[in-house]
Length: 588
Ligand code: TEU
Ligand code: CA
Image (tube, rainbow, N blue to C red; front, side):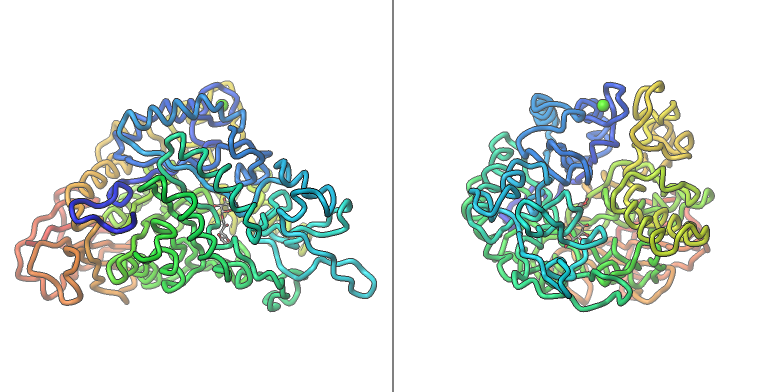
C-alpha cells in the first residue's frame, strides 16, 4: 500500500524509473519505427544505467493520431511495435533482470476507431449509445453550434459533430480521441476489466495513468470564461479537472479492481493541481494513486492552462524552479504522501535546453548538473529516454514539415491561419516549438554516430528526423568517456542508492530560495524537521548559471566535518562553483 512499511519502503519509492516512448526508442527490423524487440535488446544497457522500473508509453493497437494515446484495442499491440508475444517476452526479460514494468493507462478516452465508439456513434439507441459524452447542438441564430465554448487541449472546439446521431461528442484532445462517459458504471467496469486487469493478470507491475484527473467533468457543460477574446473556444480546465466525482470513481477503481493485486505502482499524471487537490488523491488515508507527476516544474513559464500558446512561453526565475521543487518535496515530508521527480517525458522539451543550457560549451556540464540535482531529491525519480546523454532540443531552423506531433502541428497552423505566411510569425511559431514542442522528446534516441544515430538500419528512413547533432551526442560515445553525462548519471544513480535515507527518503530544506543563480539545499534524515539536524545530512550546491558562483554554506553546517561525495567537474574542485557546477557534500 501507500505507506512506508516499518522495515523497508515500497519498491516503487526507492527504484529509479525510465520512460520509453516506443516509436522513437530502438528499431529492430529496419522499418524506421521503434519496436518492442528493440526495447528488449537494450535491457542490459538500462540495467547498467541503474534503471529499476520501465514505464512503457502506449504500445496498444491504435491509429496513432496521438501516437498511441488514442487506443483502439487495449488488449493488442500496434503491429509495427510488435506482438503480444513480444510483450510477454519483454515482461519476462524485465523481471528476469529484477526490474519492473509499468504500462500507460489511457482510459479517459479511446480512439474513434475503438469498437465501443464505432457502435456508440451509430445511433442513439444502441447498447453503447451513452458510453461517450454526446450532447445536442446549441442553435444560435438558426445555426448549429457546439454545446459550449470549450477549447480542446490541442486546439479548436472540444466537440465534433456526428451526422448519424445529429449530436456532438466531447473530445478534450483531438477529435479522434472521444472522451468516455465515466458517469456510467458499466463503462468504468469495462475499463477496469479491459484495460487494467488484463495487464495486471499478465504480471505487469503497475501503470502511469494518463490525464488521471479529468474523468469526472462538470456535466452541466457550462461555457468557460472567455480568456481568449479573439477566439471561438476557451480553455475550460476548471470544468474538467478534479471534477465532482473523481474520488468516487478512483476509490471504486481501488476497491473493485486494484486492491486484489496488492502493491501495484499507480502514478497519476496530475497537471495543474494544488497541493490540497493532489493530497485528495494520494494522502496516506486516500491512496487513490501511489503518487502523481506534479507539473509545476515542467509547466514553468508556459501559462498553459490559461490559454497561452507555445510561442508565448517565457523564461522563469530560478526561485520559481525551487518553489516548484519544494512543492513536490513538501508533499512527501509535510504531508506523508509520496511524489515523483522528473524533468522530462514524451510531452516535454529536453531539460538541458529547458532548465539549464544547451550551449556547446556548457551543455554537458548542465546535463550533469541536472542529474546531480534531481538524483538528490525525494520521490520516485523518472528519467526519459535520451535524457541520460544530455539530448537537447532540435534547432529553431527546423520547419513544420520536420514535425510529427499533432499538438505542435496544430499550434503552428493556428498561427499560420491567424497571421498568414508572415515569415516573422513563422519564425515565432518554430521558435516556440523548438523551445517547448513535444517533438523535441520524440526524435529517435541517439545510440551511436552511425547513420540514423544507430536507431534504425543505416539504409532505412526513420519515421521522424534524427537530431542534427547525433554524431556528437550518443550513447556509444558516452559509454566510453569518463565524465560524460551518461557515465555521470550512472554515478549519480549509484550515489542515490548509497544514501537512500537522505537522497530518496530524506527531508528537504532550501538554503537560499531567492538566490537567482545558486540553488543550495540540504537533505536530512526523515522527521528532522525545520531546525536542522545533528545527524549526517547532504549539502547539495547547484550553480544554475554560466558564471562562477560563491559557495554559500548554511551557518549551522559551517563547523561540521564534511566530505565531498561528487562534483560535476570531478574531484578537484575550486574555491567557487564553476559555471553549471553541482556538488554533493556529506556533512557529519
Ligand atoms: O497528456 C495530457 C496533457 O497534455 C496534460 O497536460 C493535460 O492538459 C492534463 O492532463 C489535463 O489535466 C497526456 C499524454 O501525456 C499526452 O501525450 C497525450 O497527448 C494526452 O494525454 C492525451 O492522451
Ligand atoms: Ca521497427
